[in-house]
Image 1 (tube, helix red, strand yellow):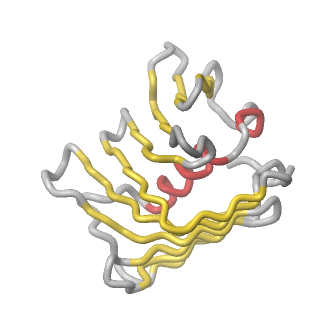
Image 2 (spheres, helix red, strand yellow):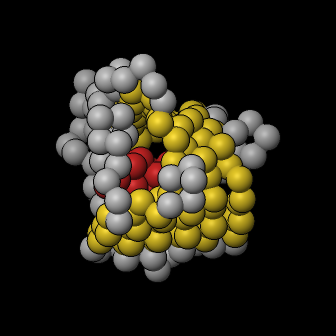
Length: 161
């Protein structure tokens, strides 16, 4: 995963709702994300407020502490969710050297796509029309899940690198 040095400074509290092809039911979790050019901390809670996991990333090492098991049949692995979040919030140029050969990350308006070497969309990220830096959904086409995001608290420092 890429360095965080180009990341914005963000504090987000979000309700993530995951839909998959594996289960007809959706699964929701609450997240608290703190992101800066030095670190990322993501806490994941059940909708009842029980802490499920904590993820820390310093730009080099990813550490996951899982307090309670996830509904593993319906939720993607926590490290996949962290990758999706970073893909959505870090600048495009940050990913340039970390993508597989001939893959591209492109943004057109409120849509960001991760394209494989054949030009097929692997991940599609949609941003809020009223607040373009806020993600509203992440669809992973290969792993067949979609994360819908409801922002509860947003603090965004536009002056960050």
